[in-house]
Image (cartoon, rainbow, N blue to C red):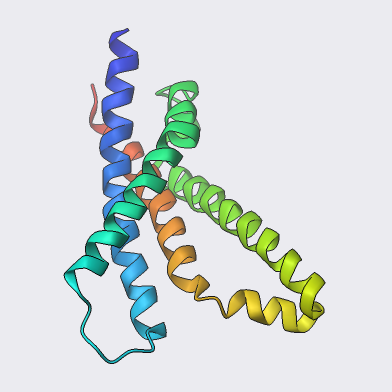
Length: 150
């Protein structure tokens, strides 16, 4: 039970760092694609923070926590570079699946080239950056936390 609670606490803290990275990456991706010249409202920042918090919390419960509980503390997957790469690849896979699903319907309606272009034109950059940043940072931070434990 002590190991479970320790891993629960460490993975939640690592995912919190991933959430912060997600918000930074999301806004870095969203600002260049913004069509308005108006300053960003506080309500937009709060809305993005709440939305990403719900998504990251779900990802923590469904993906990150179960993996963290299954991987032993002395596994090669706990090396920071390996963990960061695995976090990035798993997040990228989620992004690829979601946007492939969206692209499928666009391709059916508009043909292949126009459908792919319309999918990529839906401001996908912030979501892809945020997701990949979350996976990479959370896995890296969790691996570094593991090295600090006796």
